[in-house]
Length: 146
Ligand code: RB5
Image 1 (cartoon, rainbow, N blue to C red):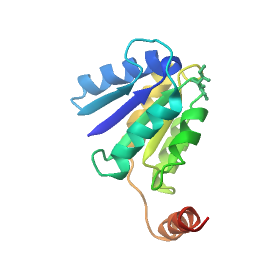
Image 2: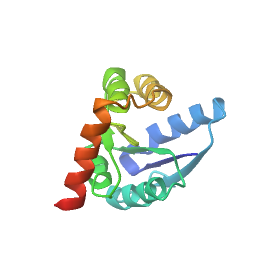
Image 3: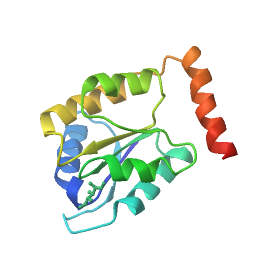
């Protein structure tokens, strides 16, 4: 199950991604702005990320205007590794090396065609482990002790 949420600035792109989930029969749950009216991205990030850290969602997609605000908020939730991606290379490597569990996109930055390729890459790439596990553990250590 993928959770997907957005604020108003990410609403259109969220809808494009949801249409793609439906086309591909990917189970999802929708959060945040439901009609394009203004809403606050930190609250959306919190609700979606809590689903990820409690195991109710294996990963999540968050969309705001730039992808940045919602990623900053997401990364405040313990256990979240959220990455803003604007291309498929970073989407691939944030899974391979960082084991990112939340993908953030900018609805005012990235067009739907590129965004869908980013989402597909993110969801279909597995964490490489090995030396990268040690580094991810070091990130968790910072999270637990600062
Ligand atoms: C909303 O206007 C905008 O600030 C928000 O979507 C996001 O881009 C914040 O980082």
